[in-house]
Amino acid sequence: MNTSENKIMDLSTAIERYVRDGCHISIGGFTLNRNPMAAVYEIIRREVKNLHLYAHSNGQGVDELIGAGCVAKLEIAYAGSGRFAPTCIRFRKAVENGTLAVEDYSNYQMTLRFLAGAMGVPFLPTRSSLGTSIIEKWGFAESMRQSDPKLPNKKLVVVDNPFGEWADTARVVLVPAINPDVTVIHVQKADRQGTARIEGLTFADIEQAKSAKHMIITCEELVESDELRANPDQNQIPFFCVDAVVPVRYGAYPTACYRYYDYDPVYLNDYRKAARDDERYKAYLDEFVYGMNDQQGLLDRIGTERLDSIQADPQKGYAVGLDRK
Image: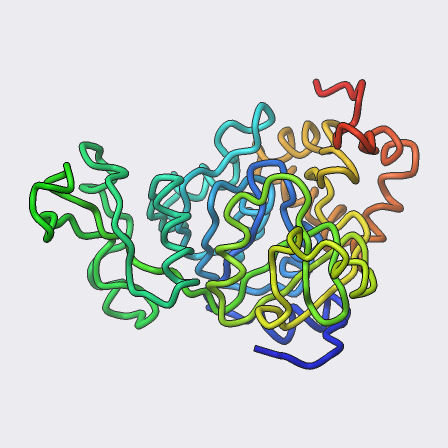
């Protein structure tokens, strides 16, 4: 990990340095909350291919990476964007077309897998998925596992409890650790050294951050270290886990960032319409991703009136009165 004092860099440099063709990458956020969208769009613009993507329960970020042809393999618990796409649209098309290999776990199992990676252990036990088809249905063939040394040789293993019947369960499921080449998450605040603060629900972002070999933080605000040190118990990600700090305003847009802005229902409704049709989706990418130099270009394209409509109430943390239809 990079432990230098100042880890500030622009997004293009961070993505070029740490996200390469074929790498194993995880992205943070949950459905429509705090997806690292500015980083996602930069990855797409750089035409990175053959990614092995990990996510907990992600929506927009996962769908756009898949839709742009960046992802070959995906390990995830759930891919959806709430009412806008209960199942992500480009994700579903890729699975149906056979262009995406997917292995699914439960939400809890994915968290445990990232936690195992963060702890430096090869697996963790759970009862989650006993009695379900998650155990029986594997998305990755044995030949695929053998060809990639970064993949475990099994999806999971069910074993008898080695400590006897006193533990009140006869069998447990062992799930393998995840150690991505790089994790990208979006946070509300970070300092130049890399200490980061997430406000609101953290989802599995902390475990993802600590499990990765390299870590890119995008943040709404770059703050002085003294501000974060004033309440150190509120800082979840330590500086020694972080390689790059990228200040990027509206870095999660069009998804929500608690206490800063809500998700944009207009954008997401338009995206849903485009994602259903291959030609319209190509036009969407050309206009809103490839046609933009960076996230600021997208914000300029959207306009201040729309952005004003999704501003979060400072007390409630979300946009009060937003028409979410």
